[in-house]
Length: 463
RNA sequence: UCCUCGGUAGCUCAGCGGUAGAGCGGUCGGCUGUUAACCGAUUGGUCGUAGGUUCGAAUCCCACCCGGGGAGCCA
Image 1 (cartoon, helix red, strand yellow):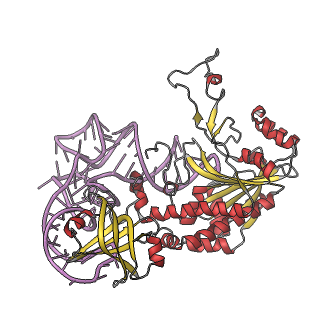
Image 2 (cartoon, rainbow, N blue to C red):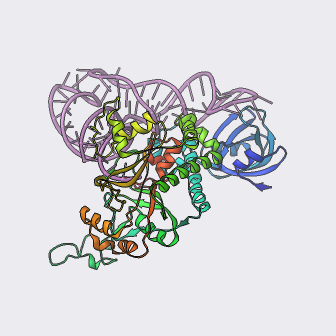
Image 3 (cartoon, rainbow, N blue to C red):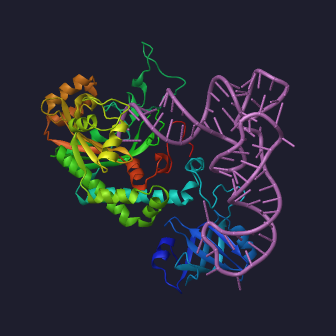
């Protein structure tokens, strides 16, 4: 007999085939003379209905053991189901119980649980319908990202997780050290002497692989990073994690328009791929989590993204028939309520806003003519806000040096970054995408802690 | 970090100065095709923690801890 996954059986299984299935019991319904058990092995949302007749050996012992959560192996014959919920089911000949799950203490019930509660049993929550679907979709997103870039000839590069420069100046950093924190070496002025630390200077967990991506793009033209990044910011929201995954493509010989084109093509590709690969899971989300996600996916795939400049966006907001909590004027950073208005109320689809004032954007973004704005872009998505942020990078050495000076960043740490402009510089552009926010966007899940298997947030790193 | 709402049975919640409640779950029994099965019975509590007010506190006051939502920061 062949061991098969539930997803395969539900899709391809034929009556009279003999199979073995291994998985976890989701629910058991006992009747007089026989029982129904639903077995799930993570391969699909739906489980396989197993019919256990009281005639099999040790029936009474076995049926007592297979409570919700128990792990079992069932051998038997596939048959057409007499019931209405499924086409095919497994008529058990033999049942092996690997591990019981005491019904009095096993925390997962057959009925719905709140996500808040499931976070307290993080090690078990992946066995639920919703989290199971989330992590299958998350996997599909990962595959889609690699496939998209590989098909286009991008090289996946591994940017370092430990860095010694805080170049972006974005948020708080986690320090990496092997000092004995109870006995820190001090220098003559009483400050911590980092020359004695592992790297001979302060080191941190990376907040972005972009600068290293630029290095590699100057050799391989088109590259992307896809890996974990870290922020020590004390952010307590449904959209922030201390450890999250980021996707950062970087393209040589590319301008802001090419960057926007890639971002739009990229999002469309991911949505198409997930819809084609996980239709059951997506329908589940559409039915139980957020009734708009199928329409949103359709909207993304079949419509062109709106593209406006920051200056135009400000004009629109100033003329909007709506009162904002934060007043609008040229020069402000767009607030959540402004982004929401543009993406959700006005365009009702993703909007790419470009050419922001240089004062509110990073030093490495290319200075536009007139020197008031930079070639930055943000993709604002309905329900999520900023999902992609990118820019054309400043490739002119003199301008970049000036910008570094203006923003007060320590230029010495960036000597290698400046060398890229000294030797064979080219126009180039890229963007960053928060991977978990993408998964949120696709699944409609409200809280970012529920789209990553082991969320890291302030005061939470138990599992 | 700020604003705001909350913490009562394993879960979801009601009770808001006078003997601690419901539904679900669990357990036991019934049922020959169930689908979050159904029917009957039953079980279950240091009311987040520590102070205070009061004859009496789950309920009012204070501090702290934890969680949700929103904001800031950002991805």
